[in-house]
Image (cartoon, rainbow, N blue to C red):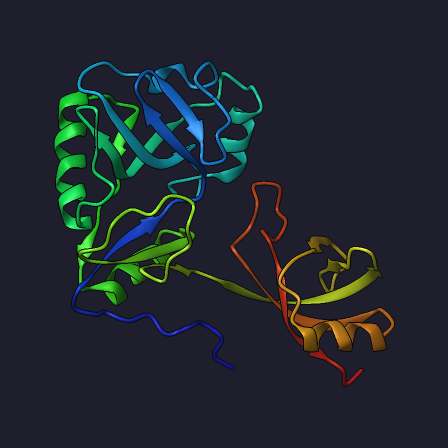
Length: 249
């Protein structure tokens, strides 16, 4: 069965890699999470001088089998100063003390490129992007075991705190057969093991109404198909979700 959603290559869109890290706003001698938590002292290498600018990006840590490692980003966020990091910038909110959020996306990309060239920091980089060729970029994401990509409609403004259909995440899901070994309710949590008995992680999100009803009627163990955002550095499925329950046991 084919589960992966169709990846399109549309005119009027640009496509960029989706790095697996922590969303961060950096500039004006500070850094912040998207929820407003000040992180300046945690990431001193991201502080830069030059023109007043506020950059939106993804804080990442280098991975072993991929360009990024979410566990490494979280380790540094939690205080591990030995963990190396970098910021992958994908947008800009202000430049020379003026808001640019209402500028079209492609103009903001040009401003961001100019800003990063002026900053010239080894810790702050521009996320590459392509026009139209979404399917080709997604193939590269799969080859490099990256989380996926983001499709963005040209001509659109930056809208803080609002999830718009003009920015579409396309996840590079991996698919696995697993055995449900335990179910707890309140909140619903499903523990997964491999057929050999190795613990693979727990499902805590993404339950459809149909899957919830099926889980209520079955007693473990039974088999399921799950999708996940790859594997954690500890060998567990990352954010697994159940997409099919095999009831033929």
